[in-house]
Length: 328
Image 1: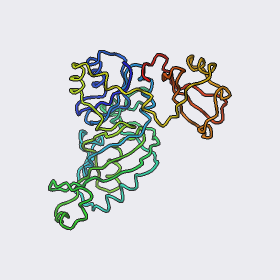
Image 2: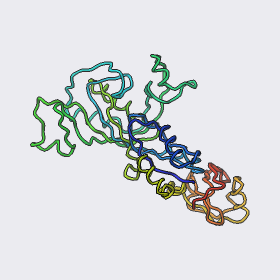
Image 3: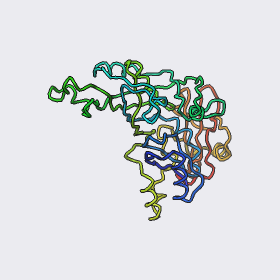
Image 4: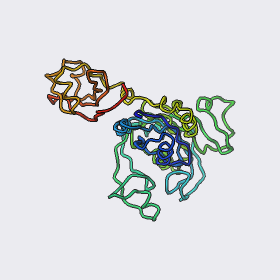
Protein backbone atom coordinates (compact mmCIF):
# COMPACT_ATOMS: atom_id res chain seq x y z
CA UNK A 1 0.00 0.00 0.00
CA UNK A 2 1.73 3.17 -1.25
CA UNK A 3 0.42 6.71 -1.50
CA UNK A 4 -0.66 9.82 0.40
CA UNK A 5 -3.87 10.31 2.35
CA UNK A 6 -5.39 13.63 3.40
CA UNK A 7 -6.58 13.20 6.99
CA UNK A 8 -8.67 15.64 9.04
CA UNK A 9 -7.05 15.66 12.48
CA UNK A 10 -9.67 16.41 15.09
CA UNK A 11 -9.19 18.34 18.33
CA UNK A 12 -7.89 16.11 21.13
CA UNK A 13 -5.73 13.89 18.92
CA UNK A 14 -1.98 14.30 18.63
CA UNK A 15 -0.46 13.74 15.20
CA UNK A 16 1.07 10.55 16.63
CA UNK A 17 -2.39 9.40 17.76
CA UNK A 18 -3.57 9.71 14.16
CA UNK A 19 -0.69 7.55 12.91
CA UNK A 20 -1.42 4.85 15.51
CA UNK A 21 -5.11 4.78 14.60
CA UNK A 22 -4.30 4.55 10.89
CA UNK A 23 -1.88 1.67 11.48
CA UNK A 24 -4.70 -0.30 13.07
CA UNK A 25 -7.24 0.69 10.43
CA UNK A 26 -5.01 -0.02 7.42
CA UNK A 27 -2.98 -2.89 8.94
CA UNK A 28 0.17 -1.19 7.70
CA UNK A 29 3.17 -0.16 9.79
CA UNK A 30 5.10 2.06 7.38
CA UNK A 31 3.22 5.35 7.84
CA UNK A 32 4.40 8.91 8.49
CA UNK A 33 2.79 12.34 8.78
CA UNK A 34 3.99 15.55 7.18
CA UNK A 35 3.94 18.16 9.92
CA UNK A 36 2.81 18.16 13.54
CA UNK A 37 -0.46 19.73 14.64
CA UNK A 38 -0.98 20.52 18.32
CA UNK A 39 -3.66 18.45 20.12
CA UNK A 40 -5.94 21.50 20.35
CA UNK A 41 -5.58 22.30 16.65
CA UNK A 42 -7.50 20.60 13.89
CA UNK A 43 -7.49 20.30 10.13
CA UNK A 44 -5.37 19.01 7.28
CA UNK A 45 -2.72 16.39 8.08
CA UNK A 46 -1.27 14.63 5.01
CA UNK A 47 -0.19 11.08 5.87
CA UNK A 48 2.18 9.01 3.73
CA UNK A 49 1.96 5.21 3.34
CA UNK A 50 4.62 2.75 2.23
CA UNK A 51 7.27 4.15 -0.10
CA UNK A 52 5.45 7.48 -0.18
CA UNK A 53 6.92 8.12 3.28
CA UNK A 54 10.07 9.11 1.38
CA UNK A 55 8.39 12.37 0.33
CA UNK A 56 7.33 13.34 3.87
CA UNK A 57 10.12 15.90 4.02
CA UNK A 58 9.18 17.45 0.68
CA UNK A 59 5.53 17.79 1.73
CA UNK A 60 6.53 19.24 5.10
CA UNK A 61 8.42 21.96 3.24
CA UNK A 62 5.31 23.17 1.39
CA UNK A 63 3.31 26.30 2.24
CA UNK A 64 0.38 26.07 4.65
CA UNK A 65 -2.82 27.99 5.36
CA UNK A 66 -4.52 28.41 8.75
CA UNK A 67 -7.65 29.99 10.18
CA UNK A 68 -7.00 31.18 13.72
CA UNK A 69 -8.98 32.86 16.47
CA UNK A 70 -7.11 35.90 17.79
CA UNK A 71 -8.09 36.74 21.38
CA UNK A 72 -7.13 40.27 22.46
CA UNK A 73 -6.42 41.33 26.04
CA UNK A 74 -5.12 37.98 27.31
CA UNK A 75 -1.53 36.72 27.50
CA UNK A 76 -0.67 33.10 28.35
CA UNK A 77 2.60 31.23 28.83
CA UNK A 78 1.86 28.94 25.87
CA UNK A 79 0.65 31.79 23.61
CA UNK A 80 -2.69 29.99 23.23
CA UNK A 81 -5.88 29.69 25.25
CA UNK A 82 -4.80 26.39 26.87
CA UNK A 83 -1.91 27.96 28.78
CA UNK A 84 -1.75 29.61 32.18
CA UNK A 85 -2.87 33.24 32.06
CA UNK A 86 -0.01 35.67 32.69
CA UNK A 87 -1.99 38.88 32.31
CA UNK A 88 -5.39 40.23 31.29
CA UNK A 89 -6.48 43.75 30.50
CA UNK A 90 -9.27 45.72 28.89
CA UNK A 91 -9.03 46.18 25.15
CA UNK A 92 -9.36 49.58 23.51
CA UNK A 93 -8.40 48.79 19.94
CA UNK A 94 -10.09 50.00 16.79
CA UNK A 95 -10.59 48.00 13.63
CA UNK A 96 -8.16 50.25 11.75
CA UNK A 97 -5.46 49.79 14.40
CA UNK A 98 -5.85 46.02 14.28
CA UNK A 99 -5.70 45.92 10.48
CA UNK A 100 -2.64 48.17 10.39
CA UNK A 101 -0.71 45.99 12.87
CA UNK A 102 -1.68 42.75 11.12
CA UNK A 103 -0.53 44.13 7.79
CA UNK A 104 2.94 44.60 9.27
CA UNK A 105 3.36 40.83 9.72
CA UNK A 106 3.26 40.12 5.99
CA UNK A 107 6.68 39.30 4.56
CA UNK A 108 9.87 37.46 5.49
CA UNK A 109 10.87 37.81 9.13
CA UNK A 110 12.62 36.14 12.04
CA UNK A 111 10.39 34.34 14.54
CA UNK A 112 11.21 32.96 17.99
CA UNK A 113 9.46 29.63 18.66
CA UNK A 114 7.32 29.54 21.83
CA UNK A 115 8.59 27.55 24.81
CA UNK A 116 5.52 25.32 24.52
CA UNK A 117 6.49 23.76 21.21
CA UNK A 118 7.85 20.46 19.89
CA UNK A 119 11.05 22.05 18.61
CA UNK A 120 14.18 20.50 20.12
CA UNK A 121 17.13 22.30 21.68
CA UNK A 122 20.13 20.15 22.62
CA UNK A 123 17.99 17.03 22.18
CA UNK A 124 15.19 18.23 24.50
CA UNK A 125 11.74 19.28 23.36
CA UNK A 126 10.95 22.82 24.42
CA UNK A 127 7.57 21.92 25.90
CA UNK A 128 9.23 19.37 28.22
CA UNK A 129 11.43 22.14 29.59
CA UNK A 130 8.50 24.57 29.79
CA UNK A 131 6.49 22.12 31.90
CA UNK A 132 9.38 22.11 34.38
CA UNK A 133 9.24 25.89 34.56
CA UNK A 134 12.49 26.21 32.60
CA UNK A 135 12.75 28.99 30.02
CA UNK A 136 15.77 29.04 27.71
CA UNK A 137 17.00 31.14 24.80
CA UNK A 138 15.56 29.95 21.50
CA UNK A 139 17.18 30.45 18.14
CA UNK A 140 15.11 32.56 15.79
CA UNK A 141 14.05 31.02 12.49
CA UNK A 142 13.32 32.74 9.21
CA UNK A 143 9.70 32.43 8.13
CA UNK A 144 7.57 34.03 5.46
CA UNK A 145 3.98 35.17 5.89
CA UNK A 146 2.63 35.51 2.38
CA UNK A 147 -0.70 36.95 3.43
CA UNK A 148 -2.90 37.59 6.48
CA UNK A 149 -6.58 38.36 6.07
CA UNK A 150 -9.15 39.29 8.70
CA UNK A 151 -12.22 37.13 8.06
CA UNK A 152 -14.37 38.55 10.86
CA UNK A 153 -14.22 40.68 14.00
CA UNK A 154 -15.36 39.61 17.47
CA UNK A 155 -16.97 42.10 19.86
CA UNK A 156 -17.44 42.05 23.63
CA UNK A 157 -21.15 41.19 23.42
CA UNK A 158 -20.36 38.05 21.43
CA UNK A 159 -21.20 39.58 18.06
CA UNK A 160 -19.09 38.21 15.20
CA UNK A 161 -19.23 40.27 12.02
CA UNK A 162 -17.73 39.21 8.68
CA UNK A 163 -15.08 41.67 7.56
CA UNK A 164 -17.05 42.77 4.49
CA UNK A 165 -19.96 43.90 6.70
CA UNK A 166 -18.02 46.01 9.18
CA UNK A 167 -18.14 49.17 7.07
CA UNK A 168 -21.91 48.95 6.58
CA UNK A 169 -23.56 51.56 8.86
CA UNK A 170 -26.33 49.21 9.99
CA UNK A 171 -23.73 46.61 11.01
CA UNK A 172 -21.46 48.84 13.10
CA UNK A 173 -21.78 47.79 16.77
CA UNK A 174 -22.71 50.31 19.43
CA UNK A 175 -19.69 52.11 20.85
CA UNK A 176 -20.02 50.36 24.22
CA UNK A 177 -19.20 47.07 22.50
CA UNK A 178 -15.44 46.70 22.37
CA UNK A 179 -13.47 44.85 19.73
CA UNK A 180 -12.00 41.84 21.58
CA UNK A 181 -10.75 39.56 18.82
CA UNK A 182 -10.83 38.38 15.24
CA UNK A 183 -10.71 35.35 13.03
CA UNK A 184 -7.71 35.56 10.73
CA UNK A 185 -6.49 33.50 7.78
CA UNK A 186 -2.71 33.11 7.47
CA UNK A 187 -0.83 31.80 4.41
CA UNK A 188 2.73 31.05 5.48
CA UNK A 189 5.89 29.02 5.00
CA UNK A 190 6.81 25.88 6.92
CA UNK A 191 7.83 26.26 10.54
CA UNK A 192 5.60 29.27 11.20
CA UNK A 193 3.98 29.35 14.65
CA UNK A 194 0.55 30.94 14.41
CA UNK A 195 0.47 31.18 18.22
CA UNK A 196 3.55 33.39 18.10
CA UNK A 197 1.96 35.62 15.45
CA UNK A 198 -1.12 36.08 17.66
CA UNK A 199 1.06 36.82 20.71
CA UNK A 200 3.17 39.32 18.76
CA UNK A 201 0.09 41.08 17.35
CA UNK A 202 -1.04 41.64 20.94
CA UNK A 203 2.35 43.07 21.88
CA UNK A 204 2.25 45.48 18.93
CA UNK A 205 -1.26 46.62 19.91
CA UNK A 206 -0.22 47.05 23.54
CA UNK A 207 -3.08 44.96 24.92
CA UNK A 208 -1.62 41.47 24.70
CA UNK A 209 -3.18 38.55 22.84
CA UNK A 210 -3.21 34.79 22.51
CA UNK A 211 -4.57 32.25 20.06
CA UNK A 212 -7.91 30.53 20.56
CA UNK A 213 -8.93 27.88 18.05
CA UNK A 214 -6.74 26.87 15.11
CA UNK A 215 -7.76 25.16 11.88
CA UNK A 216 -5.21 24.17 9.25
CA UNK A 217 -7.05 24.56 5.97
CA UNK A 218 -4.34 23.71 3.46
CA UNK A 219 -0.98 21.92 3.13
CA UNK A 220 0.48 22.18 -0.36
CA UNK A 221 -2.29 21.07 -2.70
CA UNK A 222 -4.28 19.33 0.07
CA UNK A 223 -7.29 21.29 1.36
CA UNK A 224 -9.66 20.75 4.26
CA UNK A 225 -12.38 19.82 1.74
CA UNK A 226 -10.22 16.86 0.60
CA UNK A 227 -9.70 15.51 4.12
CA UNK A 228 -11.35 12.58 5.88
CA UNK A 229 -11.85 12.06 9.61
CA UNK A 230 -10.63 8.90 11.34
CA UNK A 231 -14.19 7.61 11.77
CA UNK A 232 -14.86 7.95 8.03
CA UNK A 233 -11.59 6.20 7.20
CA UNK A 234 -12.39 3.31 9.53
CA UNK A 235 -15.74 2.86 7.79
CA UNK A 236 -14.13 2.91 4.35
CA UNK A 237 -11.58 0.32 5.49
CA UNK A 238 -14.40 -1.99 6.63
CA UNK A 239 -15.93 -1.62 3.17
CA UNK A 240 -12.59 -2.46 1.53
CA UNK A 241 -12.32 1.00 -0.03
CA UNK A 242 -9.52 2.52 2.04
CA UNK A 243 -6.81 2.12 -0.59
CA UNK A 244 -8.94 3.98 -3.16
CA UNK A 245 -8.24 7.21 -1.26
CA UNK A 246 -4.45 7.00 -1.56
CA UNK A 247 -2.94 9.54 -3.95
CA UNK A 248 0.21 8.51 -5.88
CA UNK A 249 3.28 10.37 -4.60
CA UNK A 250 4.30 11.77 -7.99
CA UNK A 251 0.95 13.49 -8.48
CA UNK A 252 1.69 15.66 -5.44
CA UNK A 253 4.43 17.51 -7.31
CA UNK A 254 2.95 18.59 -10.66
CA UNK A 255 5.26 21.62 -10.63
CA UNK A 256 8.30 19.32 -10.97
CA UNK A 257 9.05 18.64 -14.65
CA UNK A 258 8.51 15.02 -15.72
CA UNK A 259 11.54 13.27 -17.22
CA UNK A 260 10.87 9.95 -18.95
CA UNK A 261 11.86 7.78 -21.92
CA UNK A 262 15.53 8.12 -21.08
CA UNK A 263 18.23 6.55 -23.26
CA UNK A 264 19.11 3.01 -22.16
CA UNK A 265 22.36 3.99 -20.44
CA UNK A 266 20.63 6.74 -18.42
CA UNK A 267 17.70 4.43 -17.61
CA UNK A 268 20.09 1.93 -16.00
CA UNK A 269 21.72 4.68 -13.94
CA UNK A 270 18.28 5.84 -12.81
CA UNK A 271 17.26 2.38 -11.62
CA UNK A 272 20.49 2.15 -9.60
CA UNK A 273 20.08 5.59 -8.07
CA UNK A 274 23.20 6.95 -9.75
CA UNK A 275 23.99 10.41 -11.05
CA UNK A 276 22.87 11.00 -14.64
CA UNK A 277 25.13 13.19 -16.75
CA UNK A 278 23.49 15.91 -18.82
CA UNK A 279 25.22 14.67 -21.97
CA UNK A 280 23.15 11.48 -21.64
CA UNK A 281 19.79 13.24 -21.99
CA UNK A 282 18.21 15.71 -24.46
CA UNK A 283 18.20 19.44 -23.74
CA UNK A 284 15.13 20.88 -22.01
CA UNK A 285 13.87 24.41 -21.35
CA UNK A 286 14.14 23.91 -17.57
CA UNK A 287 17.92 23.65 -17.94
CA UNK A 288 18.00 27.47 -18.11
CA UNK A 289 16.92 27.64 -14.46
CA UNK A 290 19.45 27.63 -11.62
CA UNK A 291 17.88 24.70 -9.73
CA UNK A 292 15.04 22.30 -10.58
CA UNK A 293 13.56 19.21 -8.94
CA UNK A 294 12.47 16.52 -11.42
CA UNK A 295 10.08 13.57 -11.36
CA UNK A 296 11.93 10.63 -12.91
CA UNK A 297 10.27 7.69 -14.74
CA UNK A 298 11.82 4.53 -16.16
CA UNK A 299 11.24 3.07 -19.62
CA UNK A 300 7.99 1.45 -18.46
CA UNK A 301 6.56 4.76 -17.25
CA UNK A 302 6.99 3.84 -13.58
CA UNK A 303 7.76 6.66 -11.16
CA UNK A 304 11.20 5.91 -9.73
CA UNK A 305 12.72 8.97 -8.12
CA UNK A 306 12.99 12.68 -7.56
CA UNK A 307 16.23 14.11 -8.91
CA UNK A 308 17.77 17.57 -8.65
CA UNK A 309 19.21 19.60 -11.51
CA UNK A 310 21.66 22.43 -10.83
CA UNK A 311 22.84 24.69 -13.61
CA UNK A 312 26.39 24.72 -12.21
CA UNK A 313 26.64 20.91 -12.30
CA UNK A 314 27.09 18.51 -15.21
CA UNK A 315 24.73 15.88 -13.85
CA UNK A 316 21.37 15.16 -12.21
CA UNK A 317 21.59 14.16 -8.55
CA UNK A 318 19.12 11.76 -6.82
CA UNK A 319 17.14 13.28 -3.94
CA UNK A 320 14.66 10.48 -3.17
CA UNK A 321 14.44 7.00 -4.69
CA UNK A 322 11.34 4.81 -5.09
CA UNK A 323 12.87 1.54 -6.34
CA UNK A 324 9.75 -0.57 -5.85
CA UNK A 325 7.09 2.12 -5.98
CA UNK A 326 3.83 0.72 -7.38
CA UNK A 327 1.95 3.89 -8.40
CA UNK A 328 2.30 5.40 -11.85
